[in-house]
Length: 358
Ligand SMILES: [Zn+2]
Image (cartoon, rainbow, N blue to C red):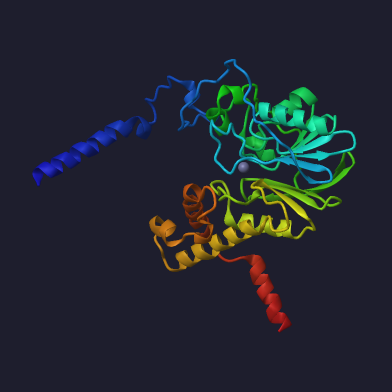
């Protein structure tokens, strides 16, 4: 017994000594300034040497798919970003205006954007004067630097890109890809952001840039083309794979999906996934509805947070890509969110209306 206690106290003492520089927060010497972020917080991941080597460019082997009269998209793999797919795992679109292409999400690297443009130039020899971005995740906008540098494009996008990313930062993509794919990619700021949903005509195309706010990320937007009956939605819709809700919220997602449903469209291009017909958003609606209902039920039944990913599964989605990797995380994240949730105001209003009618 005494020996056990002695070991226990020795261990505690060791832990205390090891943690003391953090506890007293005075004796930490910074040997590598890269390990601090702009606010002097420790960066928990490893700094990777910037890759600037030579060699031929990665060949993304891109093929544009025509979605409607004047919309073409490049569809990425249903995977996480890896060296093997060089980040080609999200969807990136081109809209044909009268004197310019307009791009919607520009893919994972400047080299990707350059190769995408070469393909589009064969369809119509127009420059890219306007770039529009759906959200801040780096698989959707690291191509911006190509359009800025080579075409002098104006970049429209969420303010969160400028708040959360700065020139020289190492994003997930920059750390993951080989230099033959990522070299020359810079984090360039967004030129214009809007506060609220805005309608505009750019290069002869009518558009509604719709703010859905905190949904898949801190700030999500989608682009509705009323004359084309096309909606480009970024990551508030995925199909064929499980979404990653690590930065998102279920309630925001469901509201975004409502806003998409409220518009009249024949084609929807998801942020990831290949289904673009009228059923394109169905999987996302189902996934988030199930997560919300089942996690709330788990909370009602007082399931311990440690057990929530065992209690709540999304059986219906087991054969979708990335299910095992991402779905448990989404459930856990939903638990954290919905624990604080006290009912949907809209639903309550609906119920009240129904009562009044009855
Ligand atoms: Zn994405």
